[in-house]
Length: 92
Image (cartoon, rainbow, N blue to C red):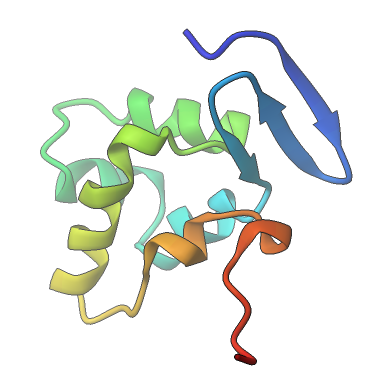
């Protein structure tokens, strides 16, 4: 589904999306693997475990993650989920 994956400078690059190793940190900020799985309504934690193991939250799940963070009062945006080198510049 994601094409070939290569690892460059701590980031996962694939044909369809580019995500950085920070996704494990984001999962931890949202309570960890099991807590995030519950927040997202997953009956088993293995989906989120897979994201953590790969350090990659699929792009089509980002809105769910942002909503879960917002419901917990945690500031998180799509740019937070992007690799640092692709984030919009704050100095404009």
